Image (cartoon, rainbow, N blue to C red):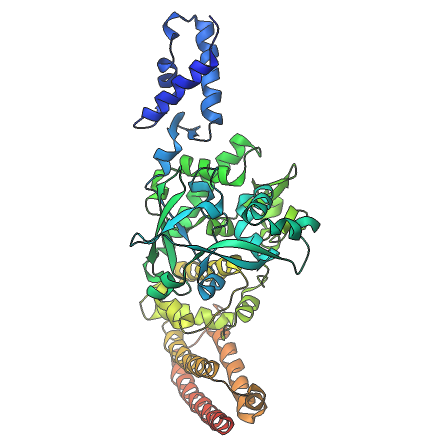
Amino acid sequence: MSLNMREVEADIDAYVSSAEHDFELADVCRAVSGTDAMSEEQQARLEKTVMNILIDSPEILFNPESRKYIPREMFFNGGKFLIIPAQMEIEQGILVPGHRFAPFCSSDIFPSEVKLTDGGGQVLSTRKVVLPIDEAAVFHALLGAGQMFEFFVADNQENAKVLSGGMNVPGKKLTLSVFDMGEFYRDHKFKHGDVLSVTVRDWTLGDFELTYVPAAARNHDGGMKWIEKLGDAMEEVIEEYSDYIEIPEQFARAFNIAGRDMLIDPQAGITEFYMRSKRIQIALVGGETVLTLINDDQSEDADDDLYDEDIPGGVCISQGETGSFDKLLKDTGSVLQESEVMSFILDQFYQEDPTFEVFFQRAFGGQKLTFADEAQEVIFLNYLEDMWESLYNNYNKFVDENKGPVRSRLVEIIEERMNWLRYLGDLEVDMEKIAAADAFSNLVSASVHFTSLCQLLSSEEHFVSGSEVENMLETLDNMAELQKSYIDELNLVIAATQ
């Protein structure tokens, strides 16, 4: 008895479409017509045929651990994932779909074809924007180089001309479809650190609904656990399927292996996963970019491999500064140094308020940080969260008993300087005249001294005795008065320029 492939495929489709939960290979084979009359050899051949059809199906997921299959629509529908809008997107009132939705809907849906509604049921419209190629690539890197190129051309035919010379041509720009988020961002007073929680309404149609999640509601401790769990599953996907499936497919299968609870209360997004994972990299394999494992020799240098010139289209992580946290702070326009950020964190612990969101608001809430792209923003948050976790795990208030009150006063003085600099940033003043004033040079010198003192108080090698605390606090009070006098002088200079 020979197999009629059309009948077999029809029987499989009928079974899968009526399935109410995940199933095993034997369940499907029993649903194929005529199996009762098959010999053992024919049944073995049928099992192999059915298995190949199920595994290769773009509508079914296979879990190699449980050996079970599940329709993708059943697995993803109702699931949630996070998107962290970049500073550029917030400022321009847009959301670049890019690779963000790809693992959570049918591969037939292009990014620009995604349907997105807000919590009130309003369908978000799209509009065209023009982005530099390198910036556009950051938002689409997890599609893979091939899919990225195809989408750029499909989204706007003019992009074909732009890309005719390749994707590594500096200065060229692409026209792309993006979601108009201006009203949504304004209604929610959306700011840096806030995120979008996206619910899959229909995997087949690419239909999603988003809701606003304030930064204070995020579980930053759970974020790393979520990333580690998805990383474990991604390793299995890479080992099981090697490099013959595309990046969105790698993510879809990893979520299936990690379990659907990953989509019930997600703690990070796929971009954040890639940025924070120490085990996964984008690599060029056979002319296509896929996710591969970082070997032991590479892992130590993983942070330096943020841009790979061998990858088509310059698939990169960030076009901004990422080499060190101090450089990153300066590049984003922050008025703080790394040691000052560390002092803000330690002061939170000393005040017995180990809340990341409160720290973030104190240190960065009023600053207008400008990120080069989404990836630089994710790296910035990674630096902060890693620093927070490291200091939290090693903090001992008993040991910090003498340094704590000194640091708290120091942080207050730094906050006073920050508040004035924010005020200055809101004014239209001649900065050359401000910078030429002696008081400005004195303020800069005082700031350098405060930074050095932050480093000293953060060092485990430096000990502060009880007898030193009072003298240090008195010195800081004097320096605070000097800082105030410098700021008062500069305010007079500002008034004269108005």
